[in-house]
Image: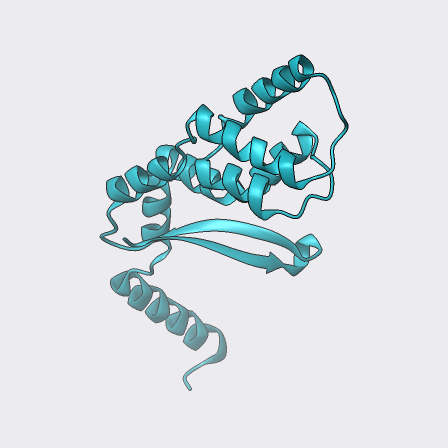
Amino acid sequence: MGVTMVRERNAAMGGRAEQRIEIAEGADIEGARALVEQSLQPAPQRQIAQWLAALRLITAHRESDPAEAGAAIKIYVQRLAEWPADCVHEAILHRRWRFFPALAELEDACQELAAPRKLLALQLRTDAGAVRRFSEAQRPDPQTTAQRRAAAQRIMREVFGPA
């Protein structure tokens, strides 16, 4: 595809992870954009409700009346439906929860899981052309490089004499 998300630790930032995208020459930007957008699709609300019901069965939770529990699940479902399906699934059923998590805990897990993909999607939506132009501008032009080298050698001869 030619579009890559690069994650690396930046010592200057105290070892914090830094993310950027690299776009290879000739990369299929539209194909990459479509693929990333597809990966951001949420799960059906019914599926999220089933995952939450399963989580409730396998975690300790405070007992509440059925109406209150139903209302809480409905709110969870509505809020979690804003996240990519695989992130919600991972947060609900593959993270270790001793107690039924607060909505904020699940949203934090979804944020952590979806952040690189959302960054990539944002950059592909808004900056793909700019990123490509920037990376092309960073490649040295052989003719310009040769001219600069010749000019530098000429200055060196003028200042220090012939070699």
